[in-house]
Length: 200
Image 1: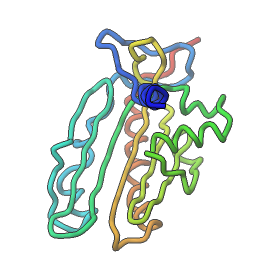
Image 2: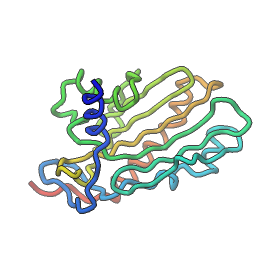
Image 3: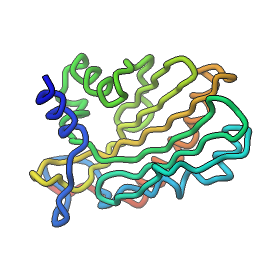
Image 4: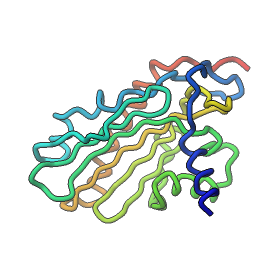
């Protein structure tokens, strides 16, 4: 059982080879060689506005350009308020909406969301996006339609942007409404600077 879980985690969090570069001609998607820096988007001022409180940056904030970038802030003097922006490369085949059965795609994103099943699917943001709700937590996962560098085994990757807001004093719908404009703006920016798809 442990071996199966480890295999699934490796698939969802591919290790990028330092020599891996270049985009796949087998995938008709634009290309970004590095994940965007999450803390360049989730600034202290923005976090304070979203959490309506003074904020504290997490010690877990990090930027690994060919793997992932994470930025987390928690509210000071308030209970249960935090905001996360995480941008990462996952295996393209795990979110390939053109090939995957909907049930398999749902299983894959549920696993990536730490076991929370999606409560809604959005088809007007990226290739597809998913909203998740668990008590005071709202999570938005965007399958961007932007490929990244291949992993150490040469497999194609996909840029996945995840936005998370926890606030027990705000309903899920309002939390989602606060996250969506950032996701839409970021995707427009990344598509504008991404390298066009390679001719097949």
